[in-house]
Image (tube, rainbow, N blue to C red; front, side):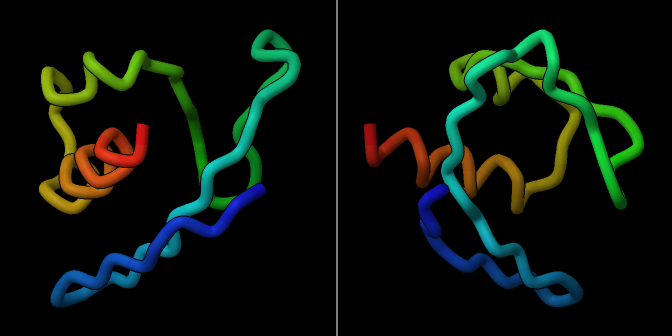
Length: 64
């Protein structure tokens, strides 16, 4: 796992990590995550999500 960045909004501080998922079928949400769905990076801009999430994804995409 690689620490990428910290992104802070007015009410939330996001700590962003890059991680590899070896067995995608076995990946399950835990702790505060109720449900998760995997999406290709280029599809995230079509999702209803927060501005912070979109900015984090764009910053990650610039690294690729």
